[in-house]
Image (cartoon, each protein chain N blue to C red):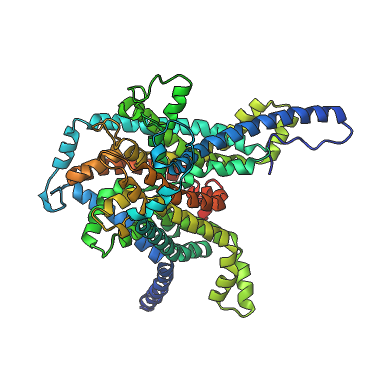
Length: 295
Length: 310
């Protein structure tokens, strides 16, 4: 990686200027590091406050202190009696289901568009890219009326379909990029050695494209996991086992009072795992979101 | 005669081959096309249909409404404020976000000890549910014991708790400003990462050459970094515009668009209209949709998607 702040490699002859330069650069680096840590701290603070509030004992919930006198796990144990487990299950099914569906449709599309030139290919990729920019918010009334008419047996199915539809574009683009980067010759070589085409793809191409596949999986899972608006729209009056976490947490806000303790305990359970998951794909997401414009 | 014969035989073979050629791609990309058609395209059709229908609050179609949904929408006393706020919302969030992320990208592009760990912290608001992030801010702004008010009280900016001054979310202008800040906060990771990727794609030897020629850091930034960062900047800004325009959870969780509709944007406004006036809400959506199409066209022009395709 080439970075402006790096000290240029110096010949050992020029001792004094090199040392002077290194000293000023390290001072600059120190300031950059301090700035970076402050920024990092600011980005973490809301989530730290989320954890602290979830751990506040009920009688200290309204305390005007940064930290409670002692921490208490009761919100995390009583949370389950509010039906939170069912919501967790619903979110797992929605996010898992839409991730599976996305893979099912995006793997062949990403592979074929990477390996073959055919009529309508550019149009197809353009269409996919355009759908990435359309989010459910503007189409909400259409989505609601469409699914009212479909009358699927469970809102879980509707939410799986909608989340898959709006997150497929990312997967198609990132898989297309990964498959394109794997030389076709590798597959051909394996086929010469007696493997079928499917075997070659399964043993050579898919493992090499794994970083892209994992990125697509985690990204789709997290997007579906975090979705609120469509969930709010399609689960009206549904039983708890069909209501995803985001909607359930939104429902802790009552007309007159808010169940903050449970709200934050639930938020911690819903949030911390996905932040950790996201760290695995952190460096590869931008390429998929910008259709390779920025990598 | 022979010519005619040839021309009747050949096209048939050709059409068959063409048919096969056209069929294979359909097998591979068909499922994706189907999903797009059912989940993205069909709702657009239904949306336009609905905007011209007279629909009861529980969803029964009572007949055609002509242009009545649109005229009702334009007669809404709150619509003007909603539209103006939407412009402020998108404009303020995107401008502030892009400005801050230009700085952040520079900081995180340089090398310093612990940079990797700090970069992980940066992604938290990107990965976390915006709903829950917004709720933390609502809690932190609580007039009685919100941690932001506790801090402002400590440094003397807030005189007393539960006062009007401490009730940030109860006063529309302050509530809206805070929600803009939250929107900037959750937007920063993506834009910073996009600019960071843009910075890293600039070849280092250009800087080397400029340094040899005696360019100052500021000159290098203005003459090399800024022009070469333009494509990444544009794409990041356009994606950010779409995201912010469509953003629902921040406003919904912090104020529900209230008091009244005084902190609503078109996205939250159409959600609330939907509860009782489905046709009118569809009319609002159609307008939203048209605005998004404009931004999407700009995005498709700015993004270099053809480069990946070819």
